[in-house]
Figure 1 (cartoon, rainbow, N blue to C red):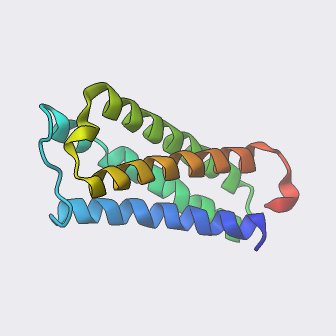
Figure 2 (figure 1 turned 30 degrees about the vertical axis):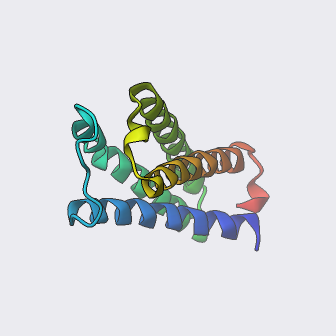
Length: 136
């Protein structure tokens, strides 16, 4: 698999994962609970910004498939959003101590999401920031 194909997969997987996450939250499958005062407000403040990341991720994949240079713009926008999301959520989790309120499965899920967002964001930033267009 080439880096370009992997990046297309990563972009679509990221977009679909974000949409699936919020669909599960809003349908009550994985509801947000008030673990500490204000947690629900904080957690539920993300759908629009996460939607922006998902849109950018989908556009990255679409433009990569079309070999359109706009993929770099949307790839870098998605990268920035993913990195910010991972760092912001991690900081909040540790500053407030909310991580200790989750079940073991919840802790694993939250940490896995943050590691994925950070890794995907860094990968996209490096891939599109290189300026090497032959991979795209």
